[in-house]
Image 1 (cartoon, rainbow, N blue to C red):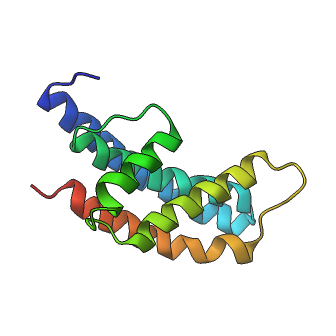
Image 2 (tube, helix red, strand yellow; image 1 turned 120 degrees about the vertical axis):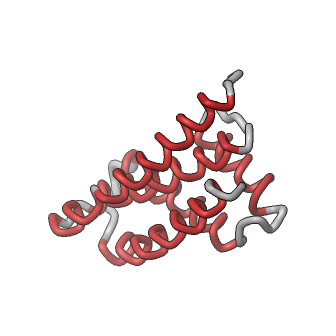
Length: 133
């Protein structure tokens, strides 16, 4: 994807806003006990922020696995991001897959609720990197 610098900045800004909006959808679903939806929104909030970071740094991925790989390769492996953040991002992806596609299992509060605060902090740490010059 060949973007001008202005287009890149606009997309990054949009993805950051999308991450924050998506995270804001979580509380109402916690109150309703919709743990699959909470897991989905946690992952996508993190996904939008990580994709903003990748786009800002001119990395392009065409799939969720590609984003995970590029994030790990260029940010976790280089210690720009803590390994624990890389592990959390992968855990969120796994939870989303389990919640969205596993017909024989329902996610529980115990599995999902601890990830809410972790994801909020993850988003803030990645946001700092996105807006660093």
